[in-house]
Length: 385
Image (cartoon, rainbow, N blue to C red; front, side, top):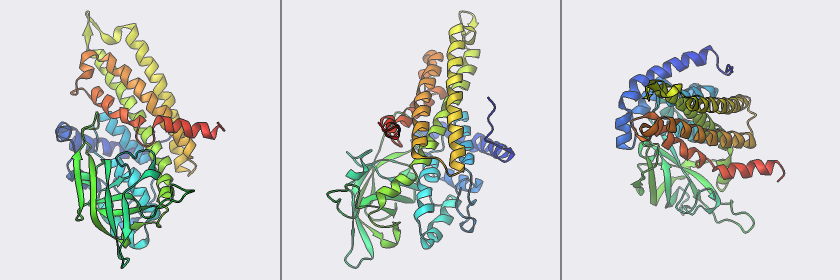
C-alpha cells in the first residue's frame, strides 16, 4: 500500500539525511562498533545538519515546533543503511522533550542553544541496580544543603545510554521519602553536568547489540548540583517521567518497523545473489513464501506506526495507543528479522552482514521503554481486565 504520511518536504529531507549517512556514517561505522561508541564529533555534525534542535524554539537556535515525521525519516534511513547514530534518538527524542516541557526560561536560555548546535548532548539516568521498571524503588538521593543553594547527590545508576558522549544528564533522584500511601512521592529530576566533581563513570557495559552506542554504569559521590538545575518541581518526578512515554514508545515502534523493513531488503538482495544447487536461493518456493509473510506482517506494522505518527502530530496519541504500537511492532520485528537472518544461512550469523547487526540491535526493543509484558498490562487494563 502507498504510504501517505510524507510530503515533498519530507522527501527532500530524506535525501539530505541519506547523503549525510553515506558520507559521514557508513564509511566509519565498523570502527565505531569496534570502539563501542560513536565519536563525540558526530553530534557536532548533526548539529550543523540542523537535526539536533527539533522543537527547540527558533530564539534558542532550534527549528521550532517540528512534526515527528522528520525524526521518523531519520530512523528509516539509518535502518536502511544498516548503521546507527549512537544515542542520537535518546538525546533528541527522549531527553530533550523533558527540557522543553519542564525547563523554566532561565534554564532554556542556558541549555537549549548548545543542544541545538550539537555542543551539548543529553542522556537520562533512571535505572538503578535492582530497580528497572519499578521507578518508585529509586534510591539515589539528593539532599538540599543547609543554605538551600545546592543538592548533594549520592547513588548509582546502570544501563545509561550515551553517558560517555553527554554533557548533561537528567537524573531521577529521591528528594524526599515515600509516604505510606504513595511510593511514588518524593522523586525529582535534576540536570547534572557530567563533568561535575563526584560524577563518575563505572564499567562500559558489553551488550548483545547496539555496539556503536555506549552504555555505562554511573555513580554519584557528594555531587553538588545547583538548585537552579532542578527540573520542574520537587517530588513530582514520577509524573514527569510518564509524560513522554507515549512519544518514546512510538519512536521504538518506528525504529522496529524500520529495522524489519531493512531486513527484508537485505534478505531479498542476498537470496537473489546467493547460489545453492545451481539456483539463486530466491528461486526456491520456501524463500518466496517466507519473504511474502514478512512483507505482509511489516506492512501491517507500518500502517499501525503511521497512524501513531499522525496521532502524535495531532496531539492525540494516548498511552494505550503507544503501548499497542510498541508491543505489536517490536514483536513483529523480532519475528521478521529472525526469518530474514535464517535466509542468509551461516552468513546471517556473521557481524559483517547487516542482518546480524539488526538481529542483535532489535532484540532490546522488547525490553527498553517498557517491556512487552508491561505493554500487555497497559492494554489489558484499558480493556477493563
